Image 1 (cartoon, rainbow, N blue to C red):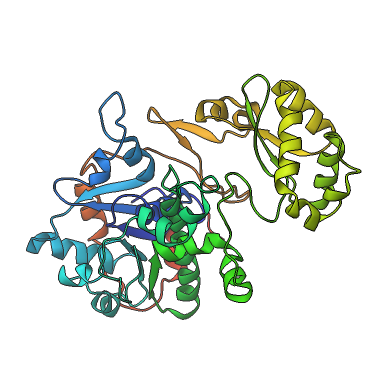
Image 2 (cartoon, rainbow, N blue to C red):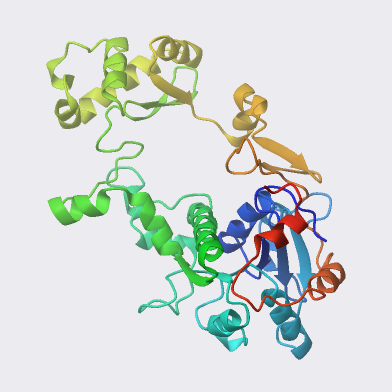
Length: 399
């Protein structure tokens, strides 16, 4: 029996997805105790070879992180036996996670309607570039496309410069959190009604969530936010500034009280141009220049100390190396090392049912025999409920 730990102990997830967004959703569930069974084709998930390899075995660090806390099973879904085993796993699961192009799951013989007929309480998370319907549904979907089409890239870059894409898998990580959240909502409904359902998460719509009021700014005001480098229209001064010793710092004045403290610190508290929000917006260039000159004339230690004393918002611009050495980050154990791999811990901290990391992504097919023998020995879930007494038997610590 899979080890039961965390608030999601007793929840079984079949993860047949690849790359980052959908497997990331399953990883969040695994961090909090769900038994996530990662199903791979015989050649292995491509994420095993994606990006930087671990120096000891050359398996991708992406894989070791995104597949942590999961059990790994190899099934050839193009074979009769492999497909039958997959059906057996799904009939005994709470959640199925997939990110095939819309229509592919059906062509494989795993149509959601059929899966729900066999297991009415099943929650199916489908992650794709553009969603399961609409004119673009059949297009290949990647985070880059969502960041370009979702309005994000157009906002990034210097004024008059090229639009910039984020240098990390931003949309994928956002969609992973959206997917995990949606699964929990669906499981809540399932536990109350016995009904499973299909969840449609698109990378494009996940990125659109990051735009805040900008769609309304266009629809109701006819305005587009321009590229402002590190600036944003509604917070001035705000950006990154270069200290005399070459260190970059970031300053925010999103609250009026903080803006007043920064203006006093740099010596322009009495300048009528900057007396209120509208004035600061109208004189953005001049105010940014004042702040840049003040910071640029001083070493970073002096700048940081002065802002901290004034209770103004400032932070050094860190590299990953700086971040991992920061005393606050160290004290909070933000990063952990598991099986020789350093990675961030669970995304949220729960004081009663904390998440945890039990192991990094495992070797190809490491759990195939154990999982199939264990899971397929159970009876399929023909009824539409997931009885609480079953979960309690699997994890006696549950109330």
